[in-house]
Length: 421
Image (cartoon, rainbow, N blue to C red; front, side):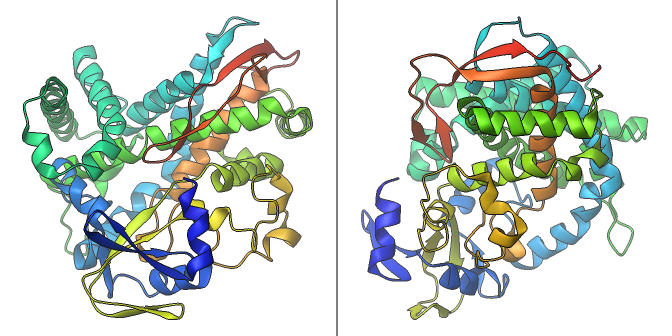
């Protein structure tokens, strides 16, 4: 991670080599905006996303150009306000069950607990109904294995995946089971014809301008895309949110005071979330400080980025981590400061300097879904519990596909007036 901020000293676009492979690293917000704002006419998904396509299929995260535009338009209703209200209820219940299971005074491995909670929240949001416990377990196991092996499968040669190592064989078996299980659930949903208020029901309901819905293959690809993006990232981010709240008594006190004022001891609803302004700023600051390392694109034509020219068919990288730690836009960038995001302060941050969900036409379609999940789950947990880092804990950042904590032992103490169940 240390090399990324250093690149900004060498210009707005820096050409580096990974082995014999040239990559252009975008190191400036204006240059990043030049890359992202024009849309997908000059760019397609980069190498990172191309390497994922054989396993995921042509989902929204791997598609480029016309296919991406078609899918993005088609999938918008999946993330409508009405649908988000339904998903938020599912996530709240998952968070309540987890939070209510903790013994008072226990020390939890919060990084593992939040990963498990993110996995549970996602699978329930995707499909409330599965044919059997075995089917649900196969899907959850496959999702966990897929997210844990993500970085390895991006950076290693594709031929490595075909080597019959024990790890590759386990991965192949788990993916085959998960694929079969997803197909079983899709078939059961089609046969039932019932809207269960979950993501799969919403996917089955979408129609294009000609009245056509998604094929089974397209449905499978979208579910796999959500499995990839909806577990490790929110799990790691939730861990960082609890870490930042638990290690700073002032932040913790302000979060709890706001929850008490807004909720008054009741469980949070979707419409409560915008009123949790300070918690929203805490989450924004976590997404700045503990951010995805990089995203990739490939140029279709010669393009300008800042003061530099990038040739056609070039691989480029833009790094939220680099931008979010730039002292020009974020003074004292390693300091956790939610009040950076007060309106009067946030307006001074240039567009393109804060991009935790990417930006432009390839911005994450599930951005609102993700922030809702982070806010809802944190609100449920912090309504019930005080959290503090276990004594003597030194938490370090570990770089994988994103930034996650190496360990996160946290002690939970029940609050006097928890939200009602």
